[in-house]
Length: 281
Image (tube, rainbow, N blue to C red; front, side, top):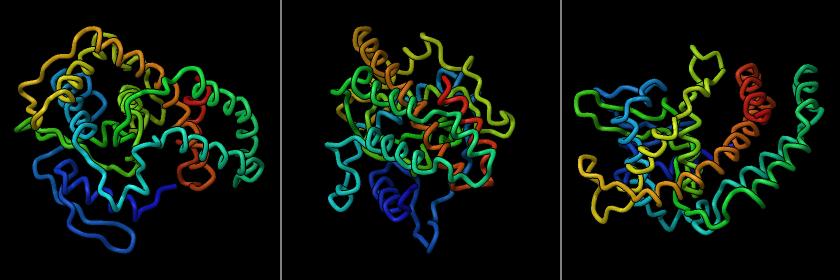
C-alpha cells in the first residue's frame, strides 16, 4: 500500500528541510534515523494539555507552510492533485476487488455486511457535495496520532515523526485526522476502541486552529513563544472546512483497514474494530 522507496526519499527531503528527524541511511527493507535523546512519545491524554496541543498545531503549520517538494519527487507528490480522493477511490476499488476473496469465511461474511456499494455512494456524496473543492492544499503528514508525535519534557520541543502516509493533501484533512486521533483506539490499553468523548471540544478546536493560523501566517521561522492568533472569522472558516473533512477521514481509515484485513492476518481483529467504527459512523 506504500511505496517504501518514495517514502524514504521523501523522508530524506523532510530531514534536509529541518522538519523530520535526522536521516542516516537506508538498507534493503528500512532506514536508519537519528536518536531523539530525552524525547518521549506522546499519549492521547497529552493532547488534552493546551500547551502541547498548540505546539503540535505550530509544527503542523510549519510542515504545511515551509516544505517545498523537491523536483525529483514531484512526480510522486503532485501539488496540483491532492492525494486524498485518489487514495480513497483506489482503496475503494481495491476493497471491492477483495469481495469474496478474504482469507477466512468469517472475514468474507463481515465484508459482505459492510455494503461497500453504500460506502462508495457516501464517498461520492462527500466529494461532490460536502468537502470544499477549493480547500487549501499542502504537503501533509496525514497520520498525526499521538504515537507519531514526540516531545522533550525538558525543553518542551515537539518533533513530528513517521511520515509514511505523508503527501500532498488538503490541510484541513490533516487537522481533521489529528482531531479524530484524540479519541485513541490504537494503543493496547484501548483494545482497538476509540473514545470519541475525547474528541476536542469546540473551544479546544478553536485554540488549536488559532495557534495553527498564527504559525502559518508567520513570514519568518516559526517561534513557538510568539504566535499571533487568527481572527475569529478566520478560525470559524477553517473549522467549517475541518468538520467536512472529519467524515472523509473516517472513510479514509475505514477503507485502509478493509485492505489491511485482506493483507495481514496478524492485524485482523484490530482492523475489524477500525472498520466497524469508521464505516458505521
